[in-house]
Length: 421
Ligand code: URA
Image (cartoon, rainbow, N blue to C red; front, side):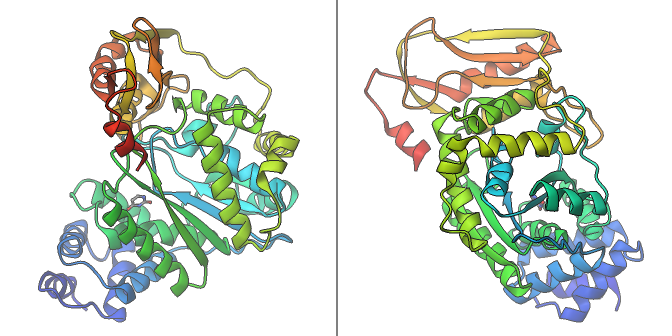
């Protein structure tokens, strides 16, 4: 094959053959096909699309570019993946909860880029906790504790690692077949037998409309089926942040509240809903995760999971050197709190990174003290901004001001209805 012929074929709207796909992904991974040719192909796929068979083959080629873990475990393995949202700390309470219910949860995660946070960045706020585990350590912890959240090893789907970085700088991220194959190549290579996908839809998500989100969900489920991984997807709203905390340490603190029987209702509800999906796939549909959560066993599993990776679950979490409180300028009802705006504000405060190599501040973030539907009085605190770089507050304030809308008391709730839809 010649790369330029593959690019031309897709440019002109042809289906790529399985052999063309296998060849181009392998040659790109080995550096035989260059970035400029792969960038042109990614753009052609972005504009022309790929059908289900092409997308499944593309995913398979990316899996085959690296190692496929085989997680032998005496319990059924089931993982969850979220397409990314603001304040989405659900993995933190969910993994130990599902483990405490009898399944095994191997979750190989990433770090955050842009306005959505990464699970590893959040857990790294815990003193001593270590993200990098060897394949043997993953297998041992999975058997012993039942839950592992750690860094994806560089040997998993290396083609995706390279291609994702290229897509990021060539305007080719937002393509359903490219996103779906990227996510599924990593998840299938990780070796979980079953997978629940939380496809986010709304202002804070990749997919802004339900139509796009449904299309992505369908593609993800089709790829899972084609590769023998039992996969289900749920669509959940990402118009407003999940819970109150957006950042790293602040999100860990909120997750621990949930594990101890408290926490914001929306975080508890989504955690339980996803736990039920995962348990049903794992053949444990008879176990009630709400009872296991209330029993404290999920919290015990959390402590074991954190300790197994060197962390101290009892140690105080890092605190920001500066906390700035924003108060309501008028009384009324919060009608909208835009997830994207809050995500960008937390990022500016230091919770996220602009480049892959940037460090994050563990203590930085935003606490949203009033959520859509809640009445507020003038002077009541709306946000707490946490940062170690006080000069960042000025950049975050206008974003938060634009993100939050206060309507007439008990009056116009149309924005609220939209946020909940
Ligand atoms: N997350 C991924 O892993 N890949 C994408 O392409 C988009 C989101």
